[in-house]
Length: 467
Ligand SMILES: CC(C)(COP(=O)(O)OP(=O)(O)OC[C@H]1O[C@@H](n2cnc3c(N)ncnc32)[C@H](O)[C@@H]1OP(=O)(O)O)[C@@H](O)C(=O)NCCC(=O)NCCS
Image (cartoon, rainbow, N blue to C red; front, top):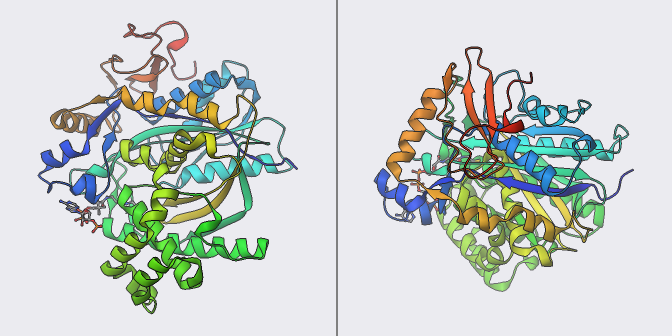
């Protein structure tokens, strides 16, 4: 069996168009600080009419193959996680096949996985399980998480975002799965869902979704700790992992979630938390589970008690989720990218715990071991290839009126046929794919920007419907 299976290479793409949260806050008439301090968000990326989940994934996959020097014939499985519905039948994976067909490689298993923000994790597990299984043919797996998170006008709108992430999966990886260490929680709830197929916007019960998320955090942490204890013969607590990475609809929920983990440690084994935390949490020791989700005092006390550990174990993972927003399936992995960006030189030998949540609901907590590895699959090369700082710096901030106008145009375009886009790629970097046309049979056409000056598709950049 293949050993140390995990992420060999990772890449991220997010649109260069964004809006500052403090600008949106003022425009929406929200009280000052609500989006920035209250939700903990700094900025939000969004697709304009020339970008969508397919163009973003074409961009990120071609760029990963190019930057890490991977032969497209070496991909044996391709799995996509997304909850952005463009077609109810044809998978995003099939659009990506255009990249591989060109090299004569059509022998690639895998399709799309969908369940809110969890689809990317399902896709990742499928690839890791494949490499660990008897069916593995020795080639790489490739996982793509791609989403455009947009909300109707109202309180949820500032919790949007957009990005695509690609991860190359194989043995001897610098980000290796501890496959026996997984705890899941799955249940039937109506916290966030998309029943209206004519609209891109979800129906969201924001408060319920917060509670469902926190209940899943507790349940997964219990399952995870139980499995750890069975396997290792000792208790698990926060001190057994260096970093905790959370799916991040908005940063405040991540702060609350980590505080819940500390509260769990306190309830299970008070000696695993420090004296200050013990004192702060003691008044809440006898609350029932339900009461604990309703208690604002507990929320406040546990966040205060967890603050020093949060700064050490979670804060380095929060850059992109705060700057780009909720990227749905890509959100958790953008947090992992933030950690690699901030800490790549000191990560080897460390355990990192991830928490994935998709409304509806599905959740898993799982463990990664970070390791030294040879170029090009090293943590430092990942940081260099992704150039997170450069990507953030070269963004274009839109005024709120232009953002709202873009959202209106996208509402109009959703599910539409027979239109051509502006084909304006002036804000995109070379190598970025963009949507040019949807024809009378709903077939989508994309082009690749090949140089700063090109506004029209050139050479092989024109990607049509496979013909
Ligand atoms: C999260 C959501 C419910 C918040 O909307 P809301 O009800 O209008 O916001 P609230 O009134 O609760 O304010 C949000 C936070 O900002 C705080 N706040 C409000 N005004 C503030 C101000 N001026 N300065 C600082 N903080 C402020 C609130 O106290 C609250 O913080 P708390 O949760 O710690 O109490 C909404 O954005 C939403 O539905 N988002 C989508 C939810 C989602 O993504 N769900 C999926 C989960 S996976």
